[in-house]
Length: 199
Image 1 (cartoon, one colour):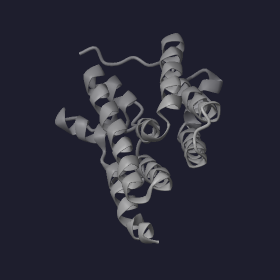
Image 2 (cartoon, helix red, strand yellow):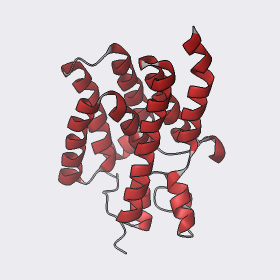
Image 3 (spheres, one colour):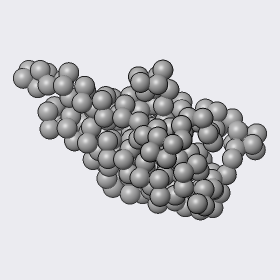
Image 4 (cartoon, one colour):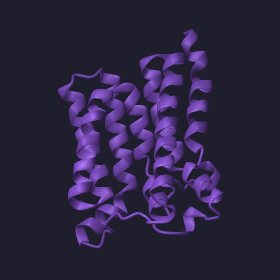
């Protein structure tokens, strides 16, 4: 019962972390509104396209970190189910950012960070699959979708706790929802292949 008292602060911290717009802030440091260039998405891939690999990497790591911290803080306050709720909260805030009219990123890096805390073995396999698909196809969207499904499958293979399996299912659903347009472009053959700014 005492843990219930921590629900609001745990979710509040997670949501606040998720709402921190890493890509937007990186763009502002370079004098660019990342929302008005490339795909317009506030994520690491679009940042790399517009600002270069180094800035894309910074945003990627920042988004992973906020996902990890959200799950960790919530777990400290509420235990295993807290990690799940914190992970979902950070992804929701990142995807539907309250500071930008409930528009945001696609939740892959945030979800990765939260899952890294909960299901590191499954994530390790997912990352390998992601890198392989990008290397073979240069479609980041396809790699993200494939890796997400792989992570979900690995939670079964590695017999991860049920709450973490539920997080993986929810995260995959969120990721697919945010990639609906990418899926349509992949199907029609019009999806853009990844290439970052050289300078």
